Length: 341
Image 1 (tube, rainbow, N blue to C red):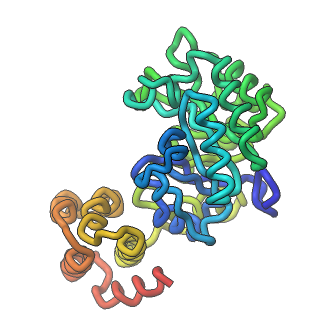
Image 2 (image 1 turned 30 degrees about the vertical axis):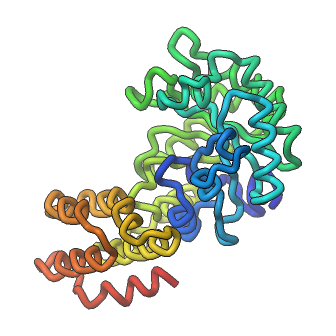
């Protein structure tokens, strides 16, 4: 893969790394619907170097996920370098991404994720250690700073670039903001102007129009979509239409949406060893797929109680059988088979 972007892609669309969401089945689905690059869930360097079974299981990916990056986190440069070496040698992704953005308490209390942003010297040590541990390109995902007093995304980004980062993604909130307030897209524009390497914009992309607006306002080289993909993996294709200046394809109808959800559920069931556990874990995706539909409250209540894929199929069939506004139930299974192909 010509790095940093796939061949022929002017403005690449990335599926953001998200714990418990951007697992292999969802990554594959988003690739099918136009994501140019995907990234794994963030994984502990300590878990990787110690070959923790739960951690290494999340490093599995299939050929149709390329180009793919593995995202690692940690505050020990030695451990991060060793993890990068193991991931490169054993799993062979296309790049290694470093998480300097996660705001979750259990991560930052060990100085990982956005906790590293309190010490930019440490940030550079980590990047250099990872770069020494792999021949693959090293990229970074950051926030704008630890808190308002330390908010300085341009300086952080320049330090990352100087240490060897090849691409930088910015979520323009501080760690203390978590997900509150609005992402300051003007900070993405400032980082774009300051850096020589490509900058990815991330944050507050809920619709295709949001992604297009970010691109126009910031001049970012690529767009990283996170929560905007929940329950609507087709957002990537829709953003591509807007970037190309052509009419945006419509979102799928109800029956097709259900078919896509079932295809996703089948991939999740095949990926996990425990079918019941896979169905329970998949409930959150089901809730996202039906958001905004008529009667979605009752529908979500039913879906959040399922223990098998068969139950999901029954609930969708019953929903489609009700009311003239819904597509014919006969469309469901043929569409599901086509979506799963």
